[in-house]
Length: 352
Image (cartoon, rainbow, N blue to C red; front, side, top):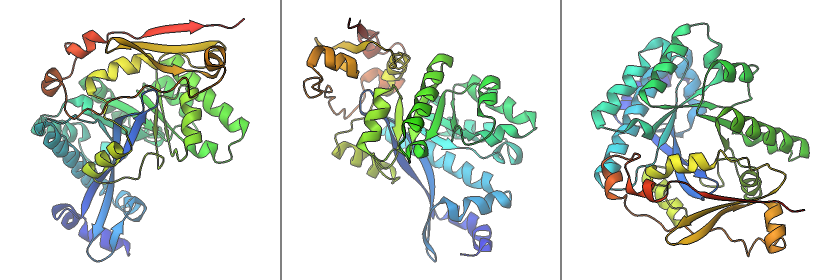
């Protein structure tokens, strides 16, 4: 497909919805629930067929048109969130990538705010991803706009953490809610690669960030990440990007239920626990008049169950078809569910 086709047909593709948002699931490792999705652009062209981002993103950036695409994606995600909320179904937060050029060629803060206000979408249902090369730009406006987003209540995620040359410098100068690291680290699956990932997660917990591993493809990778305390995962292990309803249905068919937004702060707090302690560690919560084991590390399994993982089975989580009454209006600390489940019971045991 010639680059000129993308440039000449972008407006038509947006108007006729040849460009669509596909959603890839993000799972919280400690519960196995769907806790977020990433919204990704797909172009279903009547002449060239189904196109993935490598066919058009770079061209749009080269010709300073990417802000048109991103504004459309923001509008579509907010419109869909409104549709889901109107149907009385649990809303899943969605993350979207912002280009460096979005901060230069338009008022991206107002673009996002206008869509959020238009569809009455809570700001905690829209997360914004940036790559670190955005911050290498000497334009101070970018950092100022990020501060405005954060002050307004949006989460800021750093995508492709560690892929550039100055990641640690930016962590010192700019605060992020989530760092996304690519599981390309584990392509070789050496102990050195695993040690690097462990070190990143340990650092994140110390500085108050949360970690998301993308590109997770196998059960073995998932188990490793859960064991070391990585909070969230994304990748083909959970599913490919699909239209919203297909993604939700695919997750439910796999037994992956939806995390209600009112539990987010609760589980975020739990994941501040250092899973890399040298001692036996159990995380237990009291729920539905019973104690449930959220997590047991290898040493605790050896201590209490002689290493038998089946005896320390992961607690099942019922599929939730609709939010509680409070959540349907607005999730927050006033939710009765939060009051009931205000803190986990943590039990740490050490072997002699």
